[in-house]
Structures are given as C-alpha cells and as structure tokens.
Amino acid sequence: MNHGILDARYTHGELVRKYNRIASVYDLFGILMASKASQRALEMAAIRNGEKVLEVALGTGLNFAEILKRNPRGSVQGIDVSTKMLERTKKRIAKIEHGNYALHLCDCHHLPFEDGAFDILMNQYMLDILPVEDFNPILVEFKRVLKDGGRIILVNTTNGESWINQIYEQIYKLKPPIIAGSRGVRAQPFLKEVGFTKIRREFISQFGFPSEVVRGVKK
Image 1 (cartoon, one colour):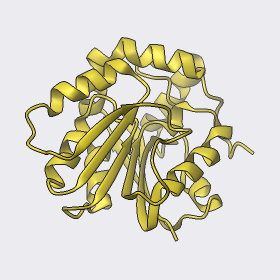
Image 2 (image 1 turned 90 degrees about the vertical axis):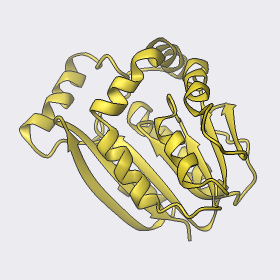
Image 3 (image 1 turned 90 degrees about the horizontal axis):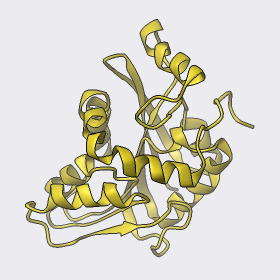
C-alpha cells in the first residue's frame, strides 16, 4: 500500500551520486526552502542538554551544527550516505566547541548503534526520496535505536495545501527537481503503523515549498 504517494525517482546508487554532485550548492535549498521547517523541527525535538541525539541524513550539517550548540554536554551522532555531504558537515562544525560527537558514512537501513541508544532521532528530507516500501523497515530501525520514551522528529516534502504548494508536485510529475527529486509524502500513518505514539504533525510552507514536521514517541 503506497498511501497515494508517487513513485520514487532514483535508485540508492543514483541518490548517492546525485547528492555528491549537489553537495556544494545544497545549502541553498536548506536556507531558502527548508530553514523554517528545520527550525520548527528543533523546537519540537525540545533537546535537553545532556541527551543522546542521532541525526540521520545530515546533509551539509546545517541542522547538525544547531544540535551541537543546543546540546554541549550531550552525545551527538550523525550519518549520511554521501561522502561529499559529510565533508561539508565536517567543515561546518569544525569551530564548534563540542567534544562528544561523531560522523558516520553508512546507510539508514542498518544503523551501527545498539538498541535503545538515543533519546532523540532527527531525520530531514529523506523519506520523500525513497520508495514507499522502504518506509516501514527504516522506521522500525529508527525505533530500535531509540530509548523507551525517545522522540523521533521527521521533516519531509509533503502534499501541498494551496495551488502554489502543488506546483512542486506538478514539476515532480514532469521531471525531478534539480535538488533531489523529492515528492510529497505524509509520514504520520507510517509512524502509527510501526508503533509510535503521541504523533503530531505540522505543515510549513516556505516560498511555496511544502514541508511537514512530524513528531512521535516510542512506547
């Protein structure tokens, strides 16, 4: 069941190559179209200094840098499949005084962490580029590494609520956007299917680009 979501455009290998190519300009997307949603995600995460936080698909580290600043006494881990994205993240956070963080080149389907390792898991603009059949297995893996009571915060391109939002969906149907080929998804039902509770969703539009921020809690 695909919940009415359009098919993904790229294979895993194609996505890795694409993100390596666009790493040098990816900040433009993050600042111009996703910064409002990212800021709201941090607010909904409500990170308490000293917590253990994992960011999956950290991109160029815009969000990761903010997590480090908010959690100087905590442990912060970040993963991405793109070597170029990780390189840009390393440059971005080099001057931040935080002694307990690590970056990993790995895939989200099999996270290199123990069960119940994290208080918070954050993931932005990833599900919207992946096949629907990958959603539940990935979310189960996310749930595995969260502590009981741990929070998951997802940000995705979502379905538009006005004509200007829907422009992006029409572009996707014709040709994948330059940035990543993301299409509108709604993560809320998938979180419910894999057992997350206290699910909350907010819609955010920035220059007409439609995003959702979804929060859930592991039982």
